[in-house]
Amino acid sequence: MLSDSTISLIRQFTDRRNWDQFHTSGNLAKSISIEAAELLECYQWSEEARDNDIEHVREELADILIYCVMMADKVGCDLDEIIIDKLAKNARKYPVEKSYGNSEKYREL
Image 1 (cartoon, rainbow, N blue to C red):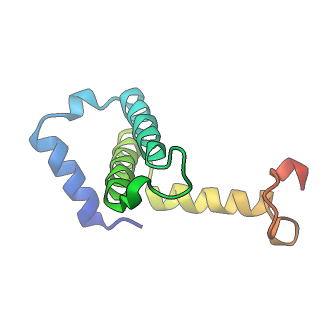
Image 2 (cartoon, rainbow, N blue to C red):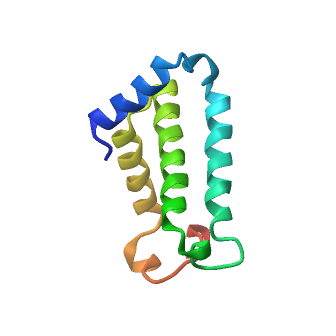
């Protein structure tokens, strides 16, 4: 997972600019979606990054992750905990013996 020092850098960055006042959970959720759309734009009309611009992909992915960390902070979620919980839930919904090599939704397995 992300290190505590990386999460601390994100907090420091926004604190030093007094931006927390703008970071409501709603605004952060919107920002995650907007940045995800910008990541998708890198792949518009292609299965590979446009012009093989992996640096742009990295930047958009970083923007998404930064906003996700900020959202988790805002709503009081521990990132490790929510990811582990979700993986456990998905493991129950998608048992290996039914889902291996199969992209069907869990209801269709």
